[in-house]
Image (cartoon, rainbow, N blue to C red; front, side, top):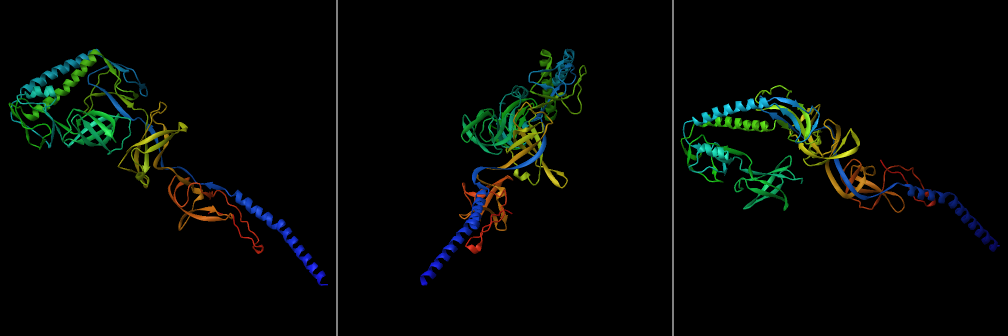
Length: 505
């Protein structure tokens, strides 16, 4: 009897085990497979390295890099004017033919005026010595004892040159990009001096240095970080020419590089004419002499030649009509040219973003005329005074594009100014980054497929992705955050572990 009872117990146990196996195969195993498939389907993102740029967008239109005025003395007649407004002209092109009779007439008038001025200069009476009008340093002193003042002025252009702001300068032509106010080294045959990049010029840069020892007129080489970037002549940054009114130099009281104060006697003279009247007459004579030489050149070749490649913006003369002055102009405008190419774009940056914009920052320009193309540019100038537009103050910012024959004045477009940039850093897509009161975080999967919060610190962002400063490393996998999954659960009563595949905000 006992043996039969044990047999039944064994049979019942076997049936229960079989039923449990069948339940596992029918219910639990399919749910586990669903969870595994859901885990496999969870969109993931592998942290990799990349570049992040922060940018500012503004709209504007193209204009010429610069303008140039072509002028002629009054009284001249243009027989023919060849270009019209909007035409492209090249350096060396004939812009107009000049009337020979009008050139001869003007030359005769100027010759008579020069004769009268020379007579006036010869009639001045002596009254004293030559003093320095301002404080400065003597950098050029060609006049010497026993020199006739007028002859010395005609020969040298002046009696002396003063530096009035304690600076010398060198202009260099270079394609190298330098930061304004950055330090460079200037070397000449007998010495060297540290200097600074003071301004950008059409061909390169203007470098300034102290005037204590730099020799005026000598060639100098400019070095940046030990590398030669160009050469030029040492000039006075803020020169003041000293002229004489006549007479003979009896004593020269200072030497080159000496400092002088206002009122110091630079030259002791005998027979010096009245200062104010002489200077005015001398200035008038120099002006008339320059114009007379220009007229003589035009008589030899009666053509107005284009000085630089450009586009005609304005024509101020009429064929067959005598040129006449207006206002305080010294010469008459014949033609205004847009030069340097249509490579300047002016945009307006609001006060919120202007603090992130700096000279020499890179930019990308997209033009309405070429919507699928991007043009490289750089920030060249930022206005320090703003203009109010509604409730926001905007600042005019000039960009310079690279030269391109297709660019035309007036083309509209938008500029993206790169305000900050990091390269080759771990990056994370912003749609995978979550935030709460404690900071930023992402989700990663643990070994059971559960989403686990991982705190991170982000840096620069471009609106699509962000730099990872700390918290997770290159090569790690995170939940991408692109989609959400519905929750899947194990039956907890059968020893399963609850699982939810949902995430995101």
